[in-house]
Length: 229
Image (cartoon, rainbow, N blue to C red; front, side, top):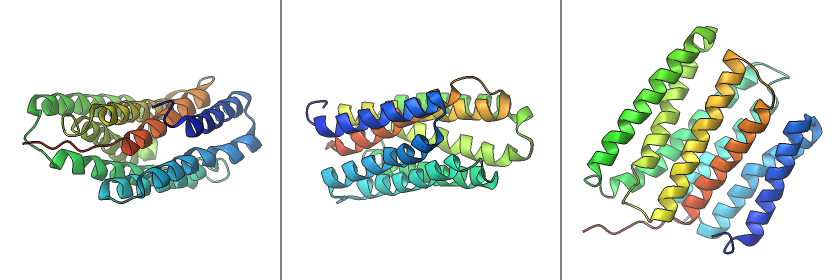
């Protein structure tokens, strides 16, 4: 896959490096220029490679648009605290579109991999409940929004796991690890914002976020629905 999409991978690697550099050195101007390019490049990649011909790719594309809105809003949250909430809503909507896209694959053969589905449900439920109650004492007036967000991102992770045996292994693995990276990014962001800020949090958040969006998008590009008898 690296050779197949060499030009795009080099472009995204440049964006990745510049964004990490900007976060590490706290270069606000460079952040403002580069951060929107993360999702813009992925939108272009998804559109040019798939033509958005099916519902799966259209939903993934729409999710990325809301992610772009979320990126911009969170980037400007220092100017107005309400932008953080708007950004949260934008990413919540992004996850809902991702869930709806992954559900299309799950629905193609709901009878498959029931054991794996049960494991995914249990693990995602354990994570969402444990992490939320860990955060809860620090949330103040954000208890309900964070609870809803935690539930939705756990659902996104679960639906990514539900694609097992329904799509080709490359697409499944890319999207599953992308969802895991998204979970990691949002968990670090929540800890840093609500529990305790720490050095280089921005670097870790953005690195895992960029990896997440890249993997999910490329998993969408490589998606091939399996025909099950």
